[in-house]
Length: 539
Image 1 (cartoon, rainbow, N blue to C red):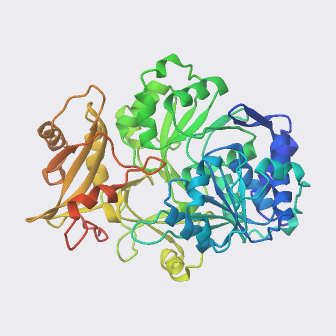
Image 2 (image 1 turned 120 degrees about the vertical axis):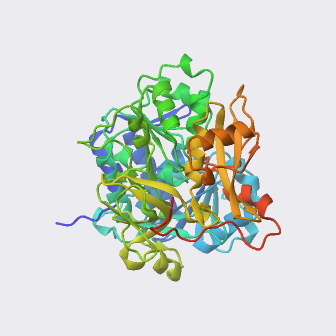
């Protein structure tokens, strides 16, 4: 017997097994799994009621809230495709995505109504605009709010046998850098099997509570919507990252797990009030979205009193590919453990990884040779929406070409050394900006650091450090350069240091290196973007 694989089954299972258990906490509102499932079914019924047809794209422009979480099941229940939007995008970017995806419905929060008002007339396919939280008198909006739509709808649950597991369930647009963003198509099968494989990679209890600290429109956020539901966890929503609010929720809701990008972790462990809160319920913190340093992993474990490890994934992989937890049979001692847990990690169940040279041949597993990460798994996307050539290029040879450069060792652990575009090529030598950043972050006065290529008449380009100092910290540029030279080969070390009050970041805390580079490369003929690194690289 083959039953279609769809994440809708996760909420169906939770309804059967944990109907009275608390499913979602969102501000003052609390919902049991029975209520959660009922609301998702009513969303499906409401979408059908306003004319949404199978395959239609339904977009959400929202901060983290229970309504967006409901969409991960209710939109799919209706047979439609969920399109979560990044609220930090500019009006032109949002208009491009909605038109490219041909979304027929857009749900939005009241505080984002002005943003949508600035471009809604340019949208060619959206027929219905619906407020998620408050009434608004704008004439282009449906008179009903989201909750009124649900209250007037008849709950709808499709026969599971009617689902096509290979059809698109969710559509996510990657960040555009030099070109327009690409729509990543994830199927019901992709999402279902990814969630099962992710569950196998972590030890959790059935009474676990997961705190959604990362936006659900981001890969690190929506990847956490499904497995906790299957396991009957309590989803705790937070709309914005505020260290004091995060600490309060950990204490009051007895949070066991949460995901952080390094910038969030840095803010949390440096919060002066963290010691006032009872954090004993925490079992693990997952770091992702950007490279972590061993010193940050150590600090999280020491201050928050839980296990901390890294992971790696992409929007195209649903998203998780690796975990950096210690494998059975390995024995990491002292600093070796923090170094291991800050690495990119090894493949979770269901994932195959390779590290290859420019000819797609595996590099040596010696922890030194550098190549591009290739991935193959049940979670790898169906392709890019309406972009067959880009899909064929990314999936050539039956493997996803990630664009991330890494080493791997004999134990199967991968360590990303950089993105292709962020590698610094100085005098023919390849320099990993991540390696230099981790060295800078080991200095006790450094809060954040970004290393970029800047033009140099002699070497073509050289590394430059952009540093944010901890409150009360004192360090100058020559001290930091000398600190790096005591730990790295000299050609890898920054030639100059600039101190900033903050680093430009995305909404999820990733440093925008392209923004940092602009000022130094204006008027240059080329941008400091490296070509692929070959196995013989001296990195």
